[in-house]
Length: 444
Image (cartoon, rainbow, N blue to C red; front, side):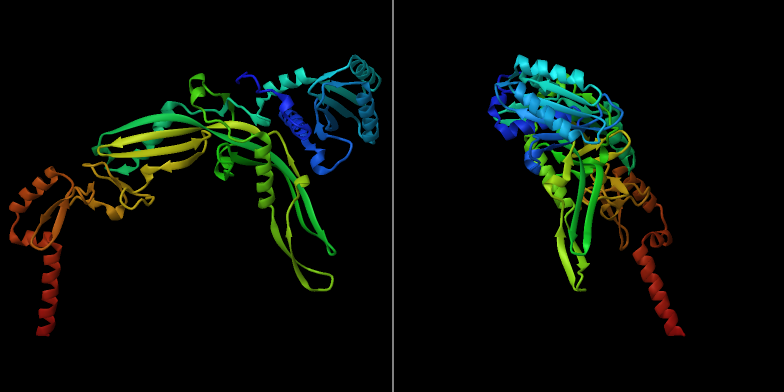
């Protein structure tokens, strides 16, 4: 990560942005259900969350954010009182005070007293500006020009160049006639940025007749393009929580596309897309037995975002040269399944349609579907219409894929008697057959 001056300038954030910034740090440190309460109008607490750190059970976490130079003992006392009130029937509760500045000696000493006194049921943690920057760096989060951004050098485990080469090779082997051409395969790997946003939704819509729409989804995720911000359902299906992550090789770092969105911008996009996904028109019957319909959807407060991960997905590009034609492949794979973003080896060069059965012209290297392929009269080998060699028999035209095949037939034709030549020419054969039927019908 770059250490350029200004990448951690917390003074560029206003109070609300500072709270959002702290929320991101918490998510990246595996706190769950992190909510900035200003958004949900939960007065008295800046951020609420849940955690299992150090315990076998999940407990509530209350965070107070102080975007100021110095925080004293009264702030700690106020949070302590709030924690005792919030504890209720819970086994344990944690409070955090996070500041961009420092804590006074009195605040630090009082926190130590509280932790000693309530060690079984309560914990207070103080995080000052220096500690916040450390956690910021560890989470690959930067603050630049007043925006909270994510920087990343993580990617999903790569396939080897040999595996990438073999993917193209296996596609080629399925093409009829490929053994008659020379081809060259060049491999390239690039990286594209994606945001992986895990979320949960807990929402219900009620009318006078009761609940008419309920959404209760847990452990879902949405994937957004790190450049365009668009939802990427295909990428979502390729990678899961078990996909192995590695560091991007140092040689590839200089060519990386940057993530174009700040943390808040991408999360706002994610929330909008999640709301759209679960929006539904519900038809129901009222208490007066009249039909009604209502547009139902979750609100922002019903959506809980977890740690947003910025990850580069390796994209594999193969360029295949066959005679005068060039083909490209672009794939993403998790080693067990493959997402084809582009694969020209599976399409006909004439019509552009994907073809199950493919053929190749030995002259120009053009891949063809069956309806655009001419088959050699003798050995049935494929050729394109541009490079077919035509030979007229008595009435019929026949075609060859190579001069050798054509010459072989010419020799055979020269040695045929008239009877064999008639049999070879299907048009003459059909004409004679039709003529025979007519004559036979006239005789009868």
